[in-house]
Amino acid sequence: MFTIIKNTCILLIISVLALTSGCALSAEETERERAYYEYKYENEEQPQGDIERLLTFLDGCVGGQYIFGGQGHAITDSFIDSTYKIYPDYFDGGRLEYLRGIARSAQLNGHRFPQDYAWDCSGLWWYAANELELYEEYTDKTAHDTYYDFCNPITKEELRPGDIVFVTNAEGRVAHMGIVGRHGFIYEAVSGFAGVVLKRTVDKRVYNDIVRGGVLQNNNWNTFGRPKIFE
Image (cartoon, rainbow, N blue to C red; front, side, top):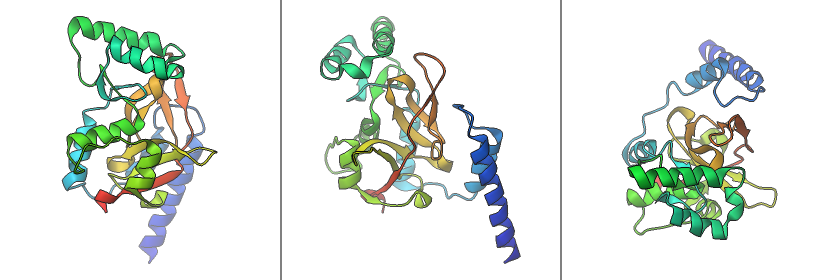
């Protein structure tokens, strides 16, 4: 009993330190945050089966780009043009020029994977799920439909590798998602300003801005689901 209480107190202290040290806007973990997460996940079981296959597959997508509607699409001028006509707002703030540069470089030198390919948030999940044939047929859904049609609700405390984290907006619609990886890391396609990342964003969604420099801070995850195929 003493050991349990002692370990609980240690975790509480580290947690408080992590939260207080996370006030400064930084795209990287502080040393206190790293210590907290290393303690929290030190006994996490190694993912097996389809979950292990999923996470290994997603490792290969980190460093890719974000284009709304992307699901592993090669970045070409024609793909940019077709998407821009429908969703011009997703190309503001220098993103159009940034992606044009990738398309022109790829045209000359060939497409590198994943740097010259694009996903959006739900597209990242469904690209992996379809490539790995986790479902019986090809599927492409929004974050909202992914949560309500393909997941069972869970709490933040129940998260484990293979689960999905979501952002539900003020209107009650699920507007964004990411995939839980090993040791609290999350795979996420983060707008055109950050691309596909693997970061521990369970408590603090802060990212490097690859287009304009500096960092981005987004709304925290507030909805959590477990894919029914992983129950």
